[in-house]
Amino acid sequence: MRKLSHVIAASLAATLALSSCGSDPDGGATPVEGDTSTVVVGASPVPHAKILEFVQSELAADAGIEIEIREFDDYVLPNEALAAGDIDANYFQHLPYLENQMEEKGFEFEHGDGIHIEPFALFSDKHDDASAVPDGAVVALTNDPSNQYRGLKLMESVGLLSGIEEGASVLTLTDEQNPKGLQFEENQPEVIVQQLEDPQVDVALINGNFILTAGLSTDEAIAVEAVEGNPYANILVWRADNENPGVETLEELLHSDEVADFISTEWPSGDVLPGAVG
Image (cartoon, rainbow, N blue to C red; front, side, top):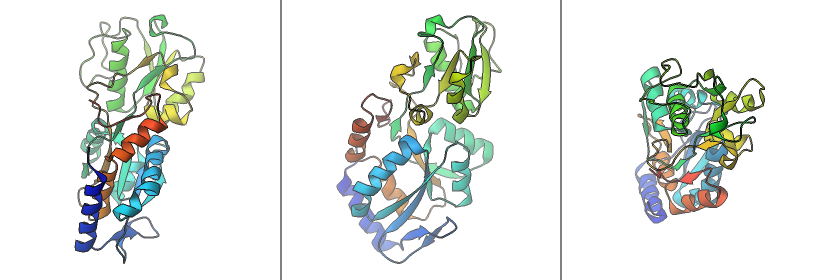
């Protein structure tokens, strides 16, 4: 774990060597006078924006940066805004999702280390246990490839599917992999939580940040992803041509002991876990 003193020293050195950057009225990063770097960060409301708010209020000033948070409710716009230069960095995604987006859309991004994990979970308003899910049940799940595979692996772990190989999707499942004949409804990840109340849906695979936004907890889920060896830690992402020194400082702050303690205190149930864990 990196220490805050190292962060502050790095920030002071950067401000002596470089002009600080800020945000122009249109959202792009532009140089400003002074010794503080303004970092415009796109983030999901929970837990990402909450973590950034803690950094802004407790750590940022001493490290020589100011954080401007822009909240996004989906998984598409934050990367598009970053590529367009409307923000300096984003904090909402894990590495498998980022790699898929970079390959698919040609984004030229770089990223830091894992900051936290939000375990993926299977919820149901109809069934109290995964073993009670009947043959032919309807499963609501995300349409993004990295998280869809993640959901299928979770279902495999509780016996609802079998033999799920890397890169699998609902379109590639064989009868052997789907012995219960489960039916899948794909949708945008932000919509899945709403489908819990759909009488036609038996179970829903929900991303961690949308679990929190909906006021749910993994304690209520019928299956929860293991965190040991989990590759889905959320990361800070920036453009490859980034020239704002405050981004590096923010990356350091997000790995400080203070942030890890905040995460553990704010989400003691384990819905958000500090560090890369796996």
